[in-house]
Amino acid sequence: MICNRVLHSYKSSKKTMSSVKIVIRNVSSEIIDQTTKVDKYTINHAVVGNGKHTILLLPGAMGTMQSDFAPQFSGLDKTKYTLVSWDPIGYGKSRPPEREYIPDFYVNDAEVLAKLMKNLGKQQYSVVGWSDGAITGTILAALFPSCVHRLVLMATMAYVTQEDVDIYESLKDISKWTPQLRSKLEAVYGAEYLERLWTSYCQYFVNLLSSSNGEVCQRFLPQVLCPTLVLHGELDPLVPVYHGKFVADNISNAKFHLVEKGKHNFHIKFADSINSKIDQFLSEK
Image (cartoon, rainbow, N blue to C red; front, side, top):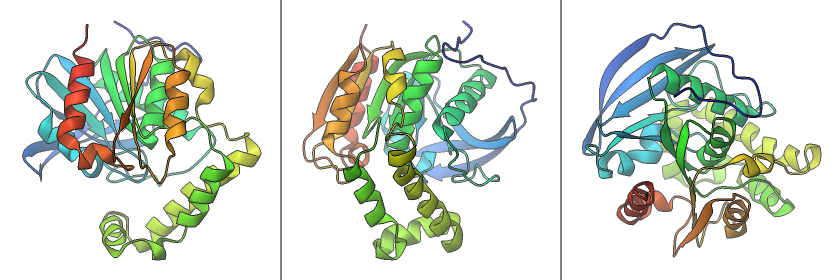
């Protein structure tokens, strides 16, 4: 099956794929760290398991496949599923280049992912996206409907409001973060790049409200045709619940589940329960 993009023409990459493999340990699973060239980007990714059903796991802002999906790599059945994930462009080991928050950078991420999966021989797969990864996953499902079998969106949003802008403004100053979080990310990015990266990320959303009427990926929701599960934390302090409900209400074949007592990273805190819900949804006929 060849992936068909419905909103824009798809130009297949003529770049040759080169891979460098390094074994790294992660909780209870072994991940093979692979570096692949897609267009001008060096993409760090991993493929774990040998199941017939491929799941593409998409991390959030500044996240990596290990920081954001360790419980899924270790907890999902790797005889039933093949798990694929990446460090998004400009994050983790997918550098250089640095992350640029250009207009429609989520669309660019989706296009690069489609090419990466094609290079890996994955013609059809389900997508599980968290936070920023859920936005990218939505666009991927909309642009390449023949590729995306099922879609799970966690802590997602499709637009920004003044309330969201106020949240981003309050989070800009990384000196106010907990020392644990700041030191964890500084170990990956260094203090200078982390501050520059996060400030630019927050400013991107602040600018969206005035430049694009808050549009993030709302225009893509009607084009998502695959069965979709939207999971949202009841107590999410970063992305209020109404965002998840809006996404579910505007995708034709979607259902919504509220994660009680869940915050933004509920898929990590309640990993066993969330993994079970993901497995159940992806196993539906």
